[in-house]
Image 1 (cartoon, one colour):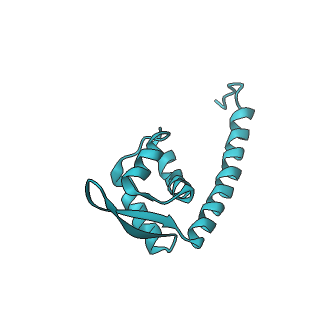
Image 2 (tube, helix red, strand yellow):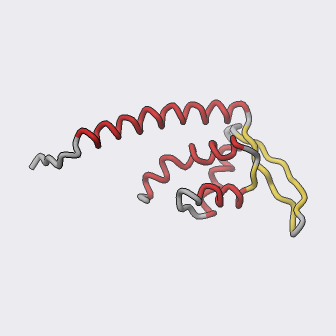
Image 3 (tube, rainbow, N blue to C red):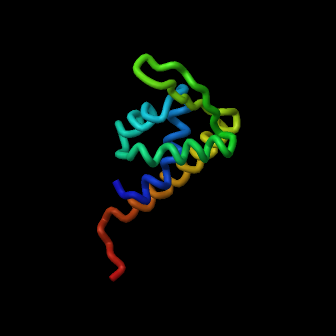
Length: 110
């Protein structure tokens, strides 16, 4: 997938997955990677940004096989931001679909 496409929707994807339930970083990467190929290193800066902006908060939970895991959960502000991004994405993707569908005939302006 085009890198620019991914950058544009990764915030929305992260917020949407965390909204489904608290999760730790690697789990988040795994769940998103089921649909979009991403590197683990791209998620942690976003999570820090969301924490600084008040969209998520963290807590530690003991792990059976190693150090405690840091879990992320959305705040009320994070849920509002997710809802706003979903609305923007829906409007944007419908507009792009309209353009693509209208121009399927292969016309060129050349």
